[in-house]
Image (cartoon, rainbow, N blue to C red; front, side):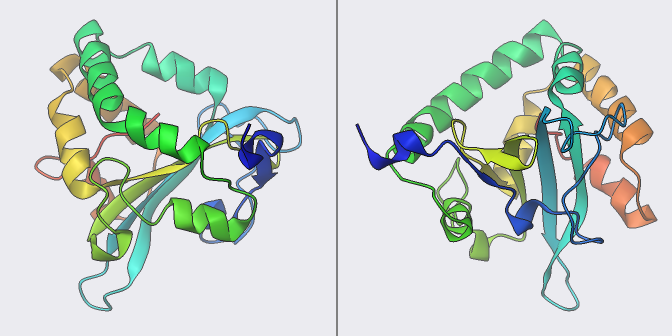
Length: 199
């Protein structure tokens, strides 16, 4: 048994806080359910892109979605998309996730280390122009049974290519209804730079 087995959650790392309020995200973006105080299970996804002027990485969008809404959204995927995504992530993430289980995550610094490389390619985040991070939570804690991970822009393109037109239409509907932001943010979800929602 490794040291990781006794520690299966960690208080929400600041990396997953709301980028404007610098506080934990409290509600599901879809149903507005309070997720922290009700001890609900949920996912947080954040997308970062390098500002071409300042050179700094900035949050392009972020949201929390409760497990029930996430399941409902994934169930809207076409059978073809589900099969393609299942095969892709099994092929590319299985080995990396196995390594994560043998790598203790006890502190917030460990989370930053965990998120320092693309889970698909292994490329350093510092070398990426754009990337997405995803974590699974329960109430005020990060769940570590499924460690948080990073996917870089090249891998995001590959994931998008696996989606059927039906799934893309459903994803467009989701982003249009629940994810808002400035005009340049909306371009984030349009071809040729369309990015998948990693629920």
